[in-house]
Image (cartoon, rainbow, N blue to C red):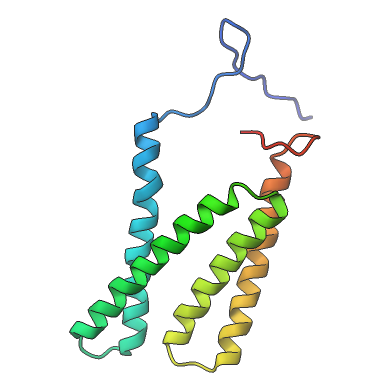
Length: 146
């Protein structure tokens, strides 16, 4: 038989936050995560583009420019998505994930139809999963609950 788990309350009767990190840590991680993800993404794209050949200066430049573009787009998507309703929020992140995969996959030299199909499948899966996550974390009036 299932029972509801009691929540912790402070002495004032309000719910305590489960956030264990301070605002400074959140600010650092707000930029550290996209930068590290961008560097990994740029390295991956450069490695796909050189097909296992030697690392050249142009290959390094391509990797760093790809990383820079990824970080900028990530920051833009994050800032725009938080202002959208749950449907737009989920679709925007899905489109970002699908486009990122499509670009990486296209660098490996496969057929464009395969890149587009894989991108659309990932975009749809990410959008559906995020819609469920955002929908399940709202109250009856549609406001986000943390």
